[in-house]
Length: 179
Image (cartoon, one colour):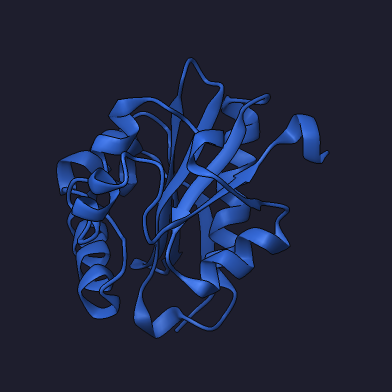
């Protein structure tokens, strides 16, 4: 394995959409996590909109993350964080999150940044980057965001709880309060 390069995803990275989608599905299966599935078309949309961050080992996909604005850019979700198994344990997930943070500050400088996770490792990364665990009502209330959870194995629980709690921890970095 060579040097891993992390960059904002661009049009020449569209060829990785299938691999990214499959990596997300594989991680969701392996971990029985709350990771929502994302189609290659959805990943393509994020890359074309300039909202992706990709990690490459030469020409091989090592990891990916994308950002999504909500509520007129009041919030930005960092989602779809994936590191392929052979690249885990090297700090790549944190580096991807840091690059996503950089992209968010360039595109949406005043937005609060949030994510949902069941992963203890991602929680630890988020905490190290200044995120705080918050109730669901402190992140976006945009119903379109919650529809993105439909493919999660825990979606029924989320609905049962009126979109106020689930197995995921909501984590928020609020630049107005935290900087």
